[in-house]
Image 1 (spheres, helix red, strand yellow):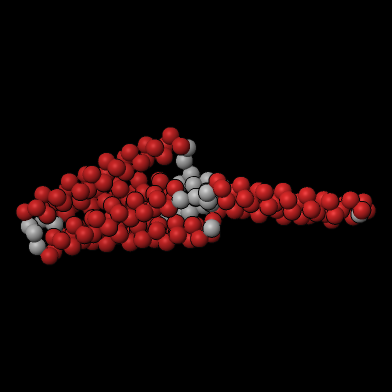
Image 2 (cartoon, one colour):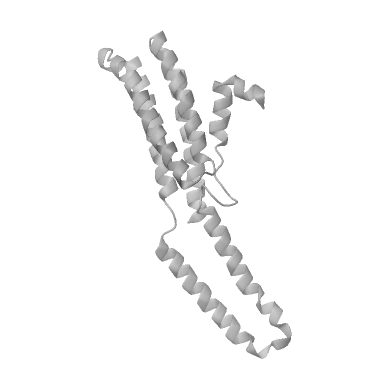
Length: 196
């Protein structure tokens, strides 16, 4: 369950980067002034999305979410007047691309909230306790090799650690890195690429 969720989060990060990159290109279909404003908004929105993936305290994550909501509203408000006036296939492409940008953030957020249920953790803990009790019960006649029977509880502990670490996308050792978003940021903003 944890690995499937981890893989899903990585796929959604890639999809989000593709959606933002595509809309960045489609912004050129807007009138020049609005195209520049949309690209600037997408660049700052991309920075917020990269911050979302980094390890942050809970309060900072809430601030990032609020800024993301405001940035999404600004992006939508930037293209909305032209979409209402020019109802052409080209404008529909721009609106569809912006819709993909906004939807991709929602999919990512939903995937980050989707964690292993507490009932599954309880079941795994019950199985681990029962298994350790059985091993301990069987080990009472083997005082000389007691160290050998400590391996099983250790392996169970490591397994629980790995599962919980994979299931925690923001914290822990195994995290979702926004590689695709960072690569896109370097393409969109060459100044960032030159400073590294």
